[in-house]
Length: 122
Image (cartoon, rainbow, N blue to C red; front, side, top):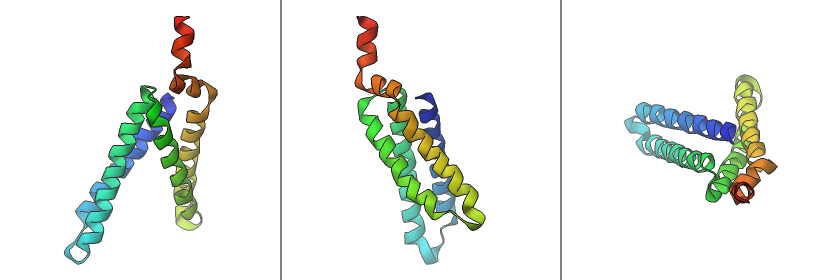
């Protein structure tokens, strides 16, 4: 779970950084597109960091959005395959798959369902 949390935070920080860069690179001829993309990236970053916090605390609600965002990132990673962006596709795909696997492990399921706390108490 800690690995999934760290990776979600790293993706969130990267999205926020790219959103800020996009906002700074926005000029008058493409103000709507540039600011729109920046707002979406910054909102995505906030979402991922909030979800990472929930994952770290074992909150049940955080598991579905964490997995959903990573499953959406897999086709995005696939779209970058080949050419000069092949390394990015491999990196993004590996990170996304790692997060999904970490969150679907039986030990993670115990944490999210609260069964681990029941076993300690009894």
